[in-house]
Image (cartoon, rainbow, N blue to C red; front, side):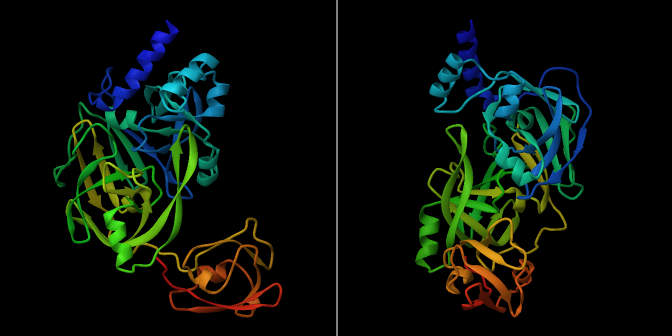
Length: 385
C-alpha cells in the first residue's frame, strides 16, 4: 500500500500543474499578509509549517512548494530509506517529503513538498526560511502582490472580482505559474517572457542567437552565476551578464536592463525570464487558473536599473581600516586597475579604506588605491556589461 501511495503521489505531482480548479471547501475571505524583501530582493512572508511559525519565500516559479530538509526531519516528514531511494530514482535525484500543511494568512494548503537545504536562502534573507510557497497557492487562489503596500493577498477564485481599470493579460498556459506572454526583445518580436518571483535576477535569457548577436556587436559583458535547484540541491550555474536596450511586453517597457545569459534550457520554454527585482516595478495580480493576470505600474516604474560600476567583492568580514579583495569580475574596472584576489587596500584617495568609498563612486570618477605592500592602483568607475 505504501508503494502504491507513493506511485499515486508522484503521478499527482506530475499532474499538479494541470489543476486549475479552486481548492474544495468553504469560500474564504481575502487573506492579506504583509511581506518583507530579503537581502536579494525575494518576497519573504510569514508562514506556519506543520503548526510551527517561520518564514517562506514566495515563488510562483516553484513547481511544488519546498520545506527545509532539517525541519522536515524534525517533523518526521522524511520517508524511510527504501521510499527515499525510490523517489530519488524516479525524480532524478529530487527528494519529496510526506504531505505537509502550509498556512499562509490563515489559508491552509496540503502540499507534497520538495525537501531542500534552505540554509543558503536563510542567510540571504536574514531570517529562518522554512519553506518556499510555490505553485499550489498560485493554482488554487488568485494571488495579488502589491509592492507599493508590501502586501500579498490570497483571493478565493470563486468570489474574486477582476479589476475594471486594468486590461487582463492572457496567459499562454496554465500548466505552470511561470506565466508566459508575448514579448519583444529590443527590435525582435515573436518572443515570450515569463515572470518569476523566485528569481533575484532582473532578467535572464538562454544562450543562443540573441546573446551571440550581442557579442558580435561588441557589447560589454562579464561573468555571472546564479543558483538553481538541480538533483535536489542548490547548485551554481555560470553565465554572462550583459545589458538589453529594452524588453517590452503587454504595453510596458523595461529599458537599459541588465540581463543574465544562462546555459541553454535554464530559462526555456520562454525566451526571457523577468525576476522579482524588475517585477517590483509593478503591482501584480495572478489568476493562473483563469489563464490571466493584471499589472499596474507603480512609483518605481521607469526608474533606472542599477548597474555595477566597480566589479569587486570584499572578503567578509571586512578588516578594520582595510579592504581585502575576495573576487574580481571579468572586464570590470577593478580588473582593469590590476586588482586581484587577496589584495589588501589600506587607503582610498589618501583616506582610510572603507567599503563606502567605492559605493559612493559615480560613473567616470576615479580613485587612487594604496595596497598594503605600498603598490598604487588607479580605478575608474564605469559600466562593464
